[in-house]
Length: 255
Image (cartoon, rainbow, N blue to C red; front, top):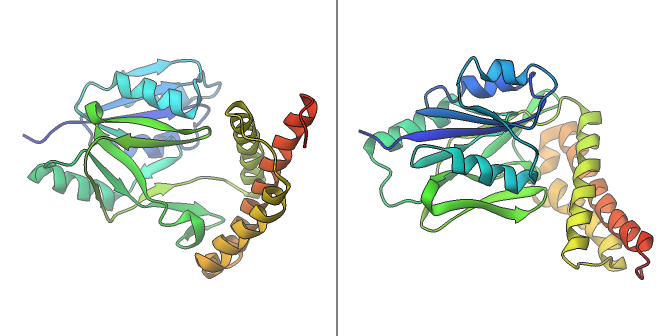
């Protein structure tokens, strides 16, 4: 018999996305959901698919992932966010792989493909965007710097070909709102860790981010959406460093 997999989903107010996500992991041996006290129908929808639904205060992107990892009952954990979907091709690739035995690998990573402004984004910084999301529970955990969590494993990792689908933003306004929120979290985390504002970073990093995303990584090949992504990413870098300066200014630090 193949080794069993626990699909672990963190969610909050995701009634528009959660059913698609849950449908895509029905093949797993267990579905675990940790919800951060949704005010919409997220919980009700989740309970149609699993009785392992827990509400817990938000511990941050890293803390919440480690919390749900500890709740998984099976040896393998598959992290999927509520606005993501395991594509049929990825499902088939995982099932075929595990049917033959996972071997000595501690984890599996695969590309994530984003649906944005009416099309799949296939270039720039958003693709292939390799994510390690399937791993041995006893050999992996979430690390990183808020708000960007990542899985680190103790052992070899294999890269799969099929993509994880990501329905990240409904429109440009939601994209900007998220960048605003993330830049605040990032600035606060940098300040907490002792990093300080530098003019050279504020002046040069945003432009470099645009050049890298739009030209060097081929974002221009995604048409107008590729340009929008590169410009908003550049603006997000400006906001991150501006907010770091603001934190120092408010607390009386030199800038």
